[in-house]
Amino acid sequence: MDYSSFLQMHEEFSLLGIMVFLLVYDIFAGEKAMKYFQPLALILLVIHTIYNAIPRDAFSIAGGMFEYVPMQSYVKAILNIGTIVILLQAHKFLNEETNRIKRGEFYFLIFSTLLGMYFMISSGNFLMFFIGLETASIPLTTLIAFDKYNRKSAEAGAKYILSAVFASSISVFGMSLIYGSTGTLYFSDLATLITGTPLQIMAFVFFSVGLFFKISLVPFHLWAPDVYEGSQTNITAYLSVISKGSAVFVLFTLLIKVFGHLVHQWQPILYGLAIASITVANLFAIRQQNLKRFLAFSSISQAGYILLAIISGSAMGMASLVYYVLVYMFSNLAAFGVISVIEERTGKVQISDYNGLYQTNPRLSFVLMLALFSLAGIPPFAGFFSKFFVFSAAAAQGFYVLVFIALLNTIISLYYYLLIIKAMYLNQNENPIEKVSSDWAVKLSLAFCTLGILAVGLISGIYGQISLLSFGM
Amino acid sequence: MGDLMTTFFSGQVPVEAYLGVSLIMFFAGVYGFLTRRNMLMILISIELMLNAADINFTAFNRYLFPAQLEGFYFALFTIAIAACETAVAIAIIINIYRNLTSVEVGNLDQMKE
Figure 1 (cartoon, rainbow over the protein chains, first blue to last red):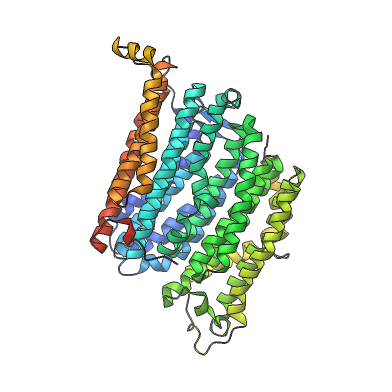
Figure 2: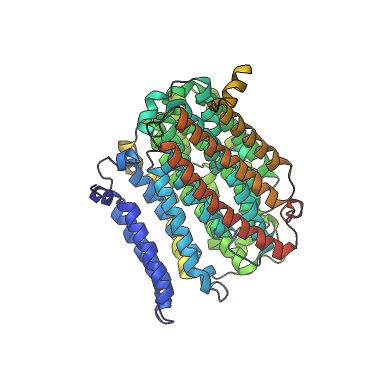
């Protein structure tokens, strides 16, 4: 057999190379060389991102197990950029005396999660998809429970793994029913074999639970606030952006590629989930006092908005979805970056602690304000354009009521995002959080995110480039 | 029912019997996951659910599509992945036991609102 075609998996192999190299480097490097571990890892990841960001021609290898379409290059590049930003934000945390020994593990685990997502995105078979999903979620659990002596962290890890495995075992049961009713697991064959028999509809419902859990839509969201609060803030950012972003893209491609004939069954399901996610998450977010829990609910409602792009099922929907994930990544990572800096230096995460933050930390509060404006969708920032594209994609398919409900919800969301901005800028406080000094890595990451929030919306070429490669039903 | 019994005793097990077993196992797992209060028991319940899917795969493959081996391979991979999940989950549960000296889920209430 000729294995040379496997070399076409550029992204996967280069990431695997980086992983193995860093693992060996971490074991054998001396005290002096270890100083360069983090810069080296970041530089390698940047080179990897730039090298793989250029789309290639579509191909399918291993008998259809691995299917590449050019759009995947952009999605993987977005995931890479997000990972780079998160690693920059975690720079200080990993340099602390207690964590220095675990640094190599942190990088290895975060890269293996990323590798799992690559395989999940490019899968052409349910077996490949399942392996990718689990390769993504098992190392992520160990990252959530990273701090062994912190009770909250262990608790979050247990909650995540028990509910993640529960969801994925329901998903596997669904896959077994799909196999039983069609006799194949290849996406390309399934497209014609899934015709909408009752067994196949049930199989679809079972199967989709695994992905809905990853995206944390409303009936499957109960793990999110606790896990977001308990894990280390940079990992929370990873969970809310990278893990979610890859899962929504996979959900979209699966729905149009494999379950295309079930469109009249999955559209009502997504319709209900979108309304429930946006509304319930918005209402719960209002009464949160902890910022990490607050952002957990905010990210659940953002996932609801992404469903509007998925429900359209069109090429425009895919373009708006990828664009939304890109913008959401910049805004959410900027918010989490500020929160992680303040939490690491002072240990404060309550909204009431942020009263009068402007007086002592004008720059950090400015970045957080931009991020929250972008998440709320206020015009000059990128968040407005991403929401606009998502709404127009859904409206183009005739979902006017859904778009109207989502629009009403953006007003509610504006209220609670403004609560934090009010706390930072208007509320009086005798002793606000003292001035925190951020290191170069965090400054770089926040500057990059701010640039993204300001520029991505204004440079129209980005959306045009994405929409060139998008495809729909 | 009579036909089913005769095929049982004549040595041929119909595919429906396997599916019945797997369905019972699956929903026993779901029930256990929702009602058990001990984390190890919850883990066992999840294993039941995964194994139910494996039985489905092998039964479908053997009876409906004997020409290929896709179902068997899927079952093999699921077993391996389930082992990884269990290893990580047990490590976390041990860590929780060290912190709390208990593995009851009722004690995981640090982050209640």
